[in-house]
Image (cartoon, rainbow, N blue to C red; front, side):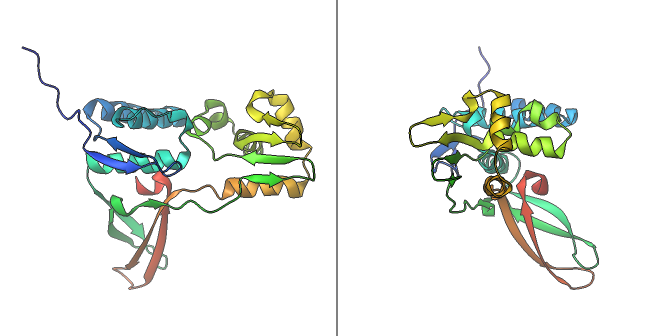
Length: 235
């Protein structure tokens, strides 16, 4: 007689922030937790990102293109899945802004949200050319070449190239990823400082999972407001 399979049926639902698609999911199981733990122990950011995305893909009932999920999709979805797998709240020690005393704070993960700003994703360069931008996807952030490059300037240029979806002219739409890396860099380097800064502004407004915490310090009584952003602030 075969052993029964446990906890395989989806029980919960969430909404993917970037697409507003509602999907059903199950908590992650020991087999996924083991992969996550091994990735965390490696301290390899690419392996960690891939393990998180693989866990999401395994737990979601509907087929999803994980490489097209944005970074904030990945953050939010993983936190929601983790909340049903490990516990619906987490305990953090947050330092007081005044005296730096750690304060024990309990955060309910269901309260964590992603706010997507109203922002135009087409940037006009001149009368003839515009650039269509895209939020960085999981595939971009998990790119080992991008992660392992130690130059901050080079990382910025690579990130800009990854976030350009297309160059628009009066006659055609040129998909940026279809061009060679050399041609991509040549195009970016031909921008004026003002034009380049407009592109950087789009990237800097990247939505992220965040949650505001208000507390009075247990030591000095100071009123604190701290905003937690991204998975690294929560775990």
